[in-house]
Image (tube, rainbow, N blue to C red; front, side, top):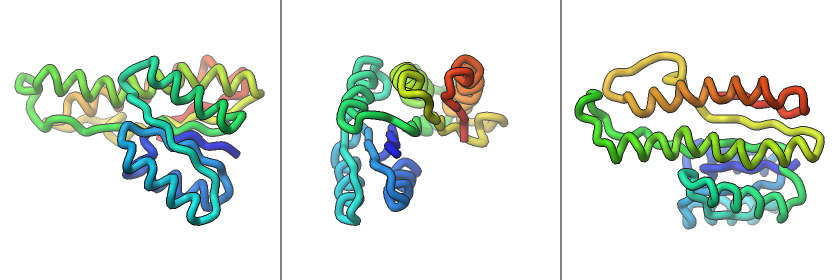
Length: 178
C-alpha cells in the first residue's frame, strides 16, 4: 500500500508515517518543514522501508495539487491519504483574535484538508478506490474558549468530511475524520 501523509514531518503525522512504514507501506511524506519531513523519510529508509519527501504549502491549492501529483507519479497510486497538517493558532477571546492569525489557521487547518481532498479524490476514484483520513479533533464536536479559529476549522473539517463521504462513497473512496 501507498500512504500519503500531509503534515508528516512532525507530531501525529510523523508517528503515523513511521507506524505505517513499519507495517510495510510505502510512504509519501508531505510537509512545509523540509528538515522534519526528510528526517522522517530517512528514518523509514534506515529501517528498510520505502519513503519519499515532498514539500507542500497546504494553504496554496497549486502547491497541494503538485505535491500530491508528484507522489502519485512516484509511487503509481495512493491507497490512503492522511490530511493532518494543523496549527492551534492564537489563544484569545474572539474580539482579540488577529485577522492574520485567523486566516493562517483557516488556511492550514481547513483549506489544507479541502485542497488535499481535491487532489486525492480523483486519483483514488480512477484507481478503483482508496481511503482518506482527515485529522479533526474533539474540538470538532465541542467548543473551547479562547480557541475560536481552531474550533471553527475543526468543526468545518468534520462537516467537509461528511460531505465528501457522501459524494465519493459510491466510487469506492472512504472519507473519515479522526
